[in-house]
Image (cartoon, rainbow, N blue to C red; front, side, top):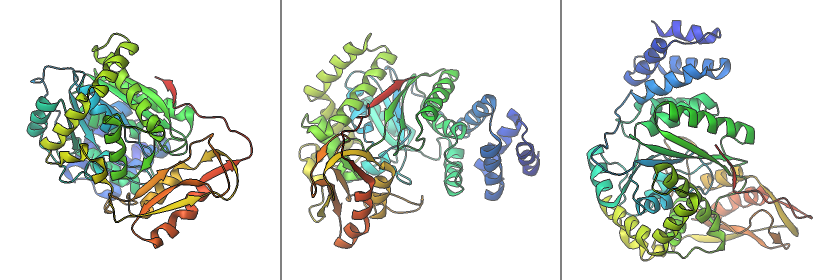
Length: 437
């Protein structure tokens, strides 16, 4: 069937058949469909909607547009965690070594930052020499040695998704649940997993800001995962303020290494708590622990004994990075950076954060991408001093900008100041974990 005929079906509100969807995804993968034809159909999907069957059909076609990992030679439960994206969202770097230390194999395929959110691959590449571009065979060797591997999406993994996502981003069709589900699950199902835990963000820094819509997304993701035979659960977690202490690639790795070294300060405790909760969920889902409290005990032991840190060091070495950052995490922070404080103009309580604006401010000084082809300055970022509910005096610090020049600081200081709303009365403090699905 010609592309025009398939586009017309959805344009007129019809339901696409499996054969039509397979033809569409094959056209995306091979280049038989032009970009303008792809975006025309995606826009029609966005406006007219997709049924559950269409959603699963797109997921399946995208999954099998590439290869599915065969991890049968690794005699451990295979599990992964995926986040829908946030600001300061760095838990993957803590979770992977933690659950690996407890006997889980983790083939983590991650993405790069785009828009206001950071990407795990960009964080990893702030470690000198770290290589995220591994073949399947090398990934398996790394996993057999240290229990986990952290790689980017290759040409082998759901190649249709890579093209589709770039076009969706360029045409403002990213925030649509069925297409989000297909994008996420086609990549995760390609990992050959037994178990998947999802961190679905909600709030001002999430792609899906409204809580009800976040729950819908979590339910759709879990239903799709289970329909493909993967034990899938989700936590709905708060993204109404930056997670933890730092926003910015190298700074976030620094925070994770401090956590693995059991040196987390008070501002990092949110990152610790969320990492532990997601990890405990994985251990119970995998059958490594019977109950959540048993899982938490195992995880605390893996952390306090130094075993998780050892595995992270080994992973860095196996993926060509410099493991010395685990002994001296300060190596991750560029000493040439300027540190410019951002202060408040009135006294009161921090009541609200425009987390989207915080993420975009870091992008504005090079810490993230506005367009997929943009480069990234791994060193720059923002240290978030205040949390919702904290009391602050006039002239007190919201946080600190890590930047290359005073011009960069001038560019985003007012944006950051405006992102933090101060009230005279104490606000309601948001729960870190809003729900389980």
